[in-house]
Length: 333
Picture 1 (tube, helix red, strand yellow):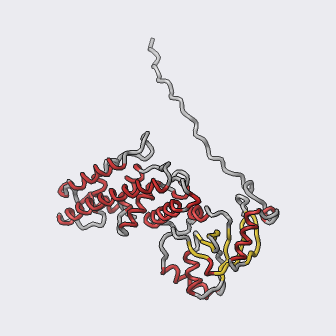
Picture 2 (cartoon, helix red, strand yellow):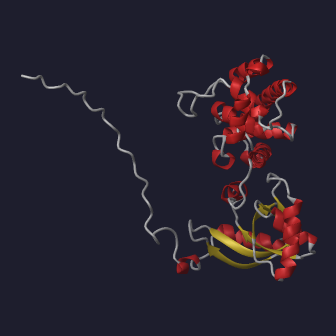
Picture 3 (tube, rainbow, N blue to C red):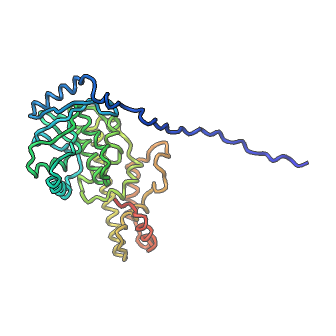
């Protein structure tokens, strides 16, 4: 009689939670609800601030998703400035916008604004404000909100033009510095504002770009992302650590750049030599982010990479290695 084949017991599996899709028309306010209700005390005070700045509140309403009160206002153009922590102004984009507005004969794209002392700041209207200023406009229409924190959070909604790593990192470090020096936000940590900052690595990389505008952030982003985690220390204190990390990263970049020179002297001419060097000296190359109990130590990781870059041997690189790096766009921003 043949013996029954033993079968291994099946491992228990945890059922995956399915994302529940909201039923159409089930979230937020109806059109009638958006226009109804008594304005909140905050938006009433906001209307007063608008008037004191020489502006006019055209109407107030509740935005349809979360029900928060918003004022639509006509504001004096010289009373609205872009927030200081946005990406740099693109003169080409601003000039193009300034050329189009007169052809249309209308300006129909309100900026978002929040109070800032006796004036207002806009987290998303830099190019529109620049274009209107160059055209000699007197007034800008704005969606004005009473909550100052919107000036930081609204950048997460800016998905029309994708930020490259440099743009995003510079925005993040500028926001971090603004929060650190704001007396109303004393004691707030990176953890407290992680939504606004998006990734801890961006703070460090942003400092690198402040110190060296030509820094190759894309080559190091995967390493830094695995090592940097949100700090629970007050922002002023955590920025000191990020500064030290940035200095270490710039030291690595110098060592990698020297290795690239050796590669060029050996006859390689690709624009992807830096990512090749970084990949070869990266001790976390095959470590998946989030798979370890604790993040790798930043200083130890970068020190190991600096040592590897200094010892980098260009004779171990083959032509096909360069071709593969170019094919995948290794580390390019």
